[in-house]
Image 1 (tube, rainbow, N blue to C red):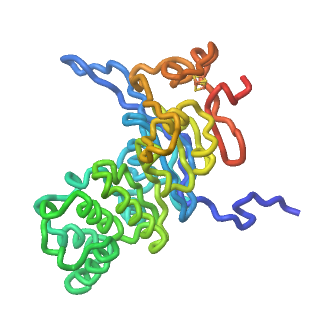
Image 2 (image 1 turned 120 degrees about the vertical axis):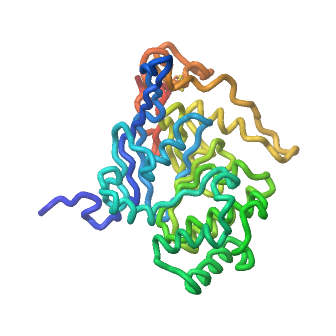
Image 3 (image 1 turned 30 degrees about the horizontal axis):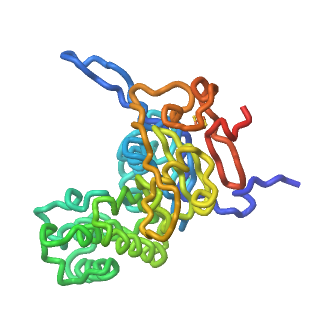
Length: 334
Ligand code: SF4
């Protein structure tokens, strides 16, 4: 009798598998631009993403989450590690294979002002994607543009207009329509609401939720705080200076976070209801420079539970419950 591996036994493999991804940027300085150090932007990041799932990737600015997203899309080459999408390593594909694969993976950018070409109308922006990837032109392209715009809460009347004629929320909707134009399976949402007014943020998040169901999408949702990803994510990965320090189902993160950094991020979520009492505390201290990382646990310079071992030994990323992993000496038994 043969022993079948889980995937051979009929379980679906993940849509995306990120394996030990590393990105180090050489830092140059001085007159002759000599190498002066290495920025360890991403340092051994691994996760999987099942079809139809949303993984929230959360951490402060500069922690490496956007670089991770760009490596998944093959916009940046990793120093080492692998990105397996639908069973294929995206960094070992030939140019034309990668171009075909790009249809399946799209990105929604943070800045709805900078991400749309101001000299192109909405029709030209959407038409570009439809023409290149689906060979749609003329009336067929226009009908599809109308459908896409209606899906994001706009209309065909917007087709001849330019980006400057729209509000930030509307521009982000156009960015979403552009991403949808090529029928992607995976969308990297790179802080898609952080540049928007709070009142508009919820509308765009609800729209992304609806579109996920309607178009059977999978999201890697990048954000700098835990408030934004709460309702949209199935699982959350918390990143700190190039590493994932905690990963679990959403409920475990919000109800039973273990890592002191995750707990500090949770305490830093503003409380909108004055009748609700919860400890609120802004996260103190600066993120260490990825050019000069502290030894041991990278969070020890800001952690109120730091022990001697934390200053010397880096904690392993260990299982702390079903599907819950954490990198902290408080839970590693070391
Ligand atoms: Fe804090 Fe130590 Fe845990 Fe790092 S390993 S988070 S310093 S307790």
